[in-house]
Image (cartoon, rainbow, N blue to C red; front, side, top):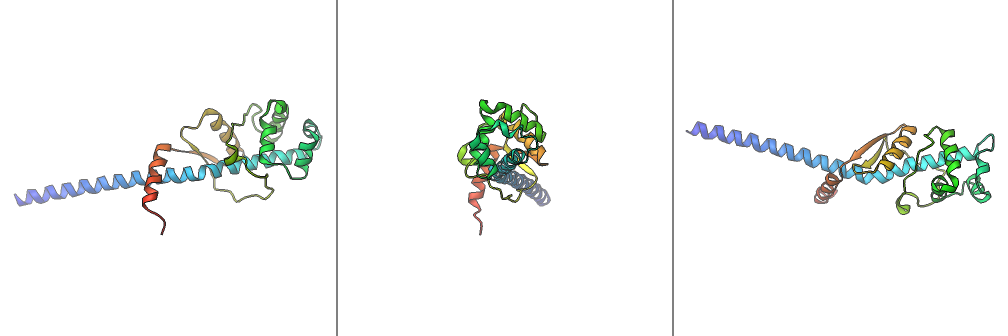
Length: 188
C-alpha cells in the first residue's frame, strides 16, 4: 500500500513538473511577443527611414534629372539641402498629385511600382527631420502585429526584403499577457 502511495506521489510530482514546464514555456512565449511588440515601431521606423533616405538619394544623385523635375522647387531644395522631413517625404510618396513621382522612384530603386505606403501615425513614424545619420540597425527583423492589414504587410514585406531584413509577427494577445508578466518581474 505504501509503495502504491509513493508511486502515485511520484506520478503527481511528474505531472506537476510537466505542467510547470508548460506554464514557463507559455510565459516565455508571452514575454517574447511583448518584446517584439516593444521593438516593432523601432524596426518599422528603421526600414521606413532607410527607404525615405534612399528616395532622397535617388533624387539628389539623379543623372538624367527626370525624377527631380517632377518635384516643386521647395521640395527639391529641401531634399538637396538635406532639410526634408519624414512627413514631407511621406507626403511626396503618398499623395495622388505625386503618384507618377512615386512610380518612377519605386522603379528606379527596384520596388514594385504599385507599392502603396500605408497611413502611419505621424507621432510614431514620421516625427522629426529625416536624419542623414544612419542609426544602428535593430537587427534582421521587422516586427509586425499578427493582425496587421494587407497594406502594411505588403509594404513592410517589400521594404524589408529590399533592405535584406525578415518580417516576423507577434501575437497581440500574447504580447499583452507578456506585458503583465513583465510588470511582475521588474528589472533589478
